[in-house]
Image (cartoon, rainbow, N blue to C red):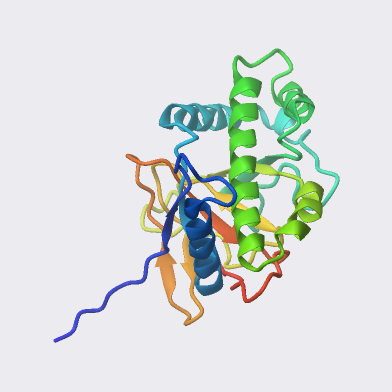
Length: 243
């Protein structure tokens, strides 16, 4: 009797010391990135440049963030839809999020901190600036690898320089009914690319071309991130994942 093997997203290591353009590791990783995004539209990134300590500090800051009084959180207003404070509301009563647009700019992080904590917040900007910059570096590396795998690496400079970086903090409140399932409606991301950071509690699911749902587990012992192609990434045969 055969056994049913549930699919898993590929894991790609970006912590290789000699991962530099033109190296054997670079070419090998480019092939892995292209295969993963064409087949699954996403993959798990092993990225030790972000330490476990930094990740824990970042999620500690995020926890404090959602304890801020509502009158401060609603001041987080974006210039574009879905770029500011969202929820809870009747449609999404257990969902809440806040955003820092252009998080690679220290000025934007400072402005966000001043809205939420006018009296000051120790280490928020330093932690967030470091975390946001390292995630942006991972995104640029993946995109550059992908473009070069299609032989259009020279075109990436103009594309990459025009992309901004949005950092979204999300909290799902535990429902009163302990048996209830908390989930966001299935969707594709309108972004160019998305990096999802799960911590302690897993919940992300990605649908394959065949219609199977892959549950993406988080491993507390490892620093891992889920890289996903968005609607804006129209390169080659990239699969647009539903999550």
